[in-house]
Image 1 (cartoon, rainbow, N blue to C red):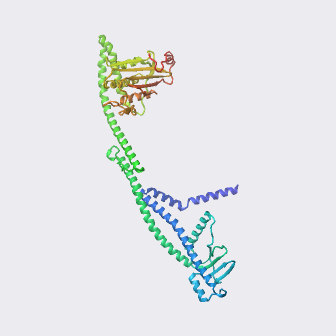
Image 2: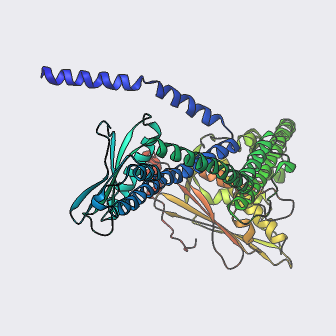
Length: 525
């Protein structure tokens, strides 16, 4: 246990020292500096780095091949010296010729082995020290062995640059196809180092020129194809953000058909939609301010009209007595509507004051308020049971039906040629919900208006309309937990309203609901 604890402490200490290495601070600074660079600078650095890496991958095998070829040339010269030595009796080469052969082959000693017989052509100096041995007879038998041999030769070539001066090396090479025949030379490494260094400098110069030329071509090509268009898109986004409502700041697509062109077109379309939406929001805000001012004065006028209408109740005329309550109720509803006008569009609407009430009298009141039926022009039909009750806010439901019926009247009156119109309000109960259908035989809803039918200021079907009627109706139905939708019809338009009951009712209300018969869809009163 104590040994394990010591090992763990040692491991933690090693990890702490590893994290404290200066390389991590350098990496953090480099990473931050890299993030601060612009796209052109990053492209230039990456292009130069990748081209330089490619040149390095070419440079290393090149110097390795040069070294092997240079040594093979020395082995070939030594083999020729061996053949020359065999022409002398006993292989005794004169000293003058021996010195010339060593100079030509740039070696200090030559030995060979042919048909199992080893021969020392030019003997080595007994005082000479051999510092490294290299065998060039290796022949890889597989691809993997070939890669390993190439890497080993690259390492030997790199080692020549860092080796100390004055080294002597021994090199073995093959003679012919017999693997047992060989030629062996002992030579100073200085000529090899000088030749390899000169070759490396030449390759390095050519590599630098190729790298700069390639990097410049790649940089300018990518800059024109990618970087400049991306910078243009970025500038357009920043320029548009400064004033999104200015249509002149919308990007103009360049007409390209690749991904950059698609991005430009999509960005331009998105900016157009956003600019239009912001302009509409601005107009709506201005409209809301105007409505609030008008609403303030209108409430005062309606209050005065309400005070005057209250005096009508003391007039004994039967006609006045019959219409005065309806006039007062309409004025009360108008005043309440003015008070609730600015609630439209809020994130949260006030909860409706729901009650269980008869639906048919309310529908009849909607018809009377809108002057329905109209003789020889528009019929007004109610298809529901007299005892059908609905759990809703009375004023809210009146506004819903009024908006839908008013839209139906306008659609029928605007039809050319104008037919004899008919507006039907049909209602029935299904379980704990009431379905109300408002149908007319007008021209119907155009297809282009269906997508934004319940959106304010966008779903209007007629010239000069605002589209608020259906938007208000949909919002109020949503406050009740229900929904309204347009039905598919062959002629005219039909809207179906669904208003569910509240989650819990009093015992009396539940008893009332139990006494009401259910009318299924398609059933009549």
